[in-house]
Image (cartoon, rainbow, N blue to C red):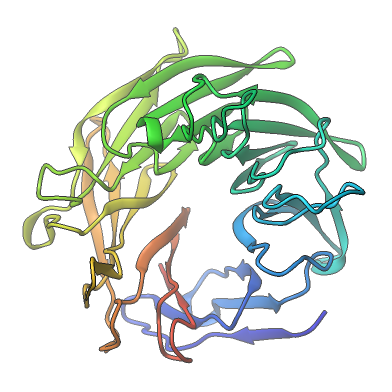
Length: 376
């Protein structure tokens, strides 16, 4: 292992706000304690998996549940004994043992089929309990490239075996089924933003069965998350409040039918923080219990014009009447005059009373070095 670094940086005790700097490519594990004063982060720089080829984008997609993490390298080239195939993709499961994540305790998820060029296996990943799901949005159907597929794996003793492959619902080129995925226990959601659609699957017996689908407009399905009977889906292109102002949708599962009904109204920030043109609210989403967090991440530039727009993130809370209202607003609070903004809100996650917001364009440690902000 190249290095292990522990930090609790730029703490604001009155708000429970932490700023953790990112250095290079890494795998991150967050340790939470009861009080803000003891909150910390550990990151392992570089080598938590086998050596990967250049431009593999190892760590582009990650998820964690208990003692297992899943990491994707969706642009990894693969050589099956002939010419190297571009962007086939590879995915690994990492296991924490004796309280530690190491670069030796990993295994690669192997598909029953060998994979094809431009599959992008690992563009999206998720893990819950004994199940892991991997999106391959570039996979072809016959000669049609980019229809997409997902793969579900299950833990079988010391191995993770392919359980089921689910192919795209369409044969349209570049549909990219599996561009986003999430899994919670026996429930699975798959986003196909190029077809503004999400699909809901449920484990019935030994098979993942399609239970529902929702099609809206724009790039609905750019971000998805599912937890405990609720799902959230982002559409950063929604134009209700201006071009690419964005919106998020909440769905609730009907226990009797297994269908997923949209809860109204759509989620937007309110008051002084109402979405505006190019906010891209809904670019990232996460949900846990009664709370959901949604990122708004403006683009670096439009045409040849660089922007200095700052990202944001918003927490919504569900009340006893099934109404979701804005609970907290987090804005990027650092001085940053470099062109292209900071990408604050480009990634978000929430678990219990803790939330984390990524800012991959943060310039504290150098141009686009990146940072993550933790909130309690």
